[in-house]
Image (cartoon, rainbow, N blue to C red):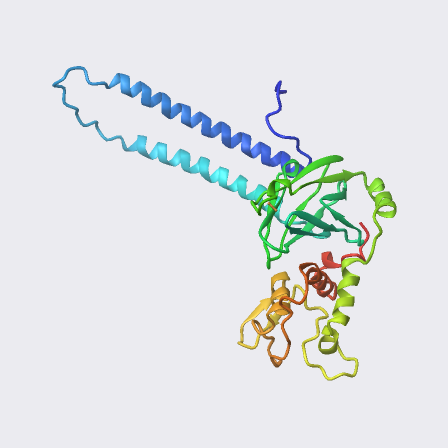
Length: 323
Ligand code: CUA
């Protein structure tokens, strides 16, 4: 059925189509029951109205079957809505393995992007069509929110926390990007666009576009040297080992000094850089200095990418993988 006017804003991902279908069905169900209940209220108000001043109301007979029916039917409708909603949510917010990872840092009042191949952009992000893209979000100051209506995705960028979102655009074009969290005087001007290109065009853009600079992995590796992380965290090399080796760390379990254990993820690595004593690895002395306030959000995310690249998840091999 083709409507004479668009019901929804343009959509450019398969997730967007599913979100719209879900929304339509929920809206239809809600409108149907609202009208049904309103109609019954009106009907009963007229049918059982008071006919004389001295009329006294009388109690209706109980109808158990009726009460069970109107409880059980909505229960199953709700459960079905919940199950469908959960499925779409999980699909929309869990990035598939092997997604290309881009860095995306929000600050007052702009979005800074970096491609896995090293190119940087501000407020405009070029991406290839048909490829799963994962954006690792961070903020340098306050909470911002990355929102692309055509993709039906929105995710907060929270200072001090690693969040991410993903999308796979199935349409080329230029799509609005908004900051969807009030973040100060120029929040309303913190806008941009996501430009979806044919993969071949994207490759050409990468070659002819902004100078590539260093990839995040390479920049992270250099920081690892210049911040002297390498003096303690290098495997072997003849030096006295003062900190745990980071090879094969990411995504794997770590045993801590207090006897507990956890899986090394982004927030653990971040915390260990900024507040090394918080979760000390079993068998090591609390000798690492804090890097809180000494490195920028961008440097932190480069270090994270580098630590990821040292082992663990395949998707983390940023820069080395081809799109
Ligand atoms: Cu950034 Cu609103």
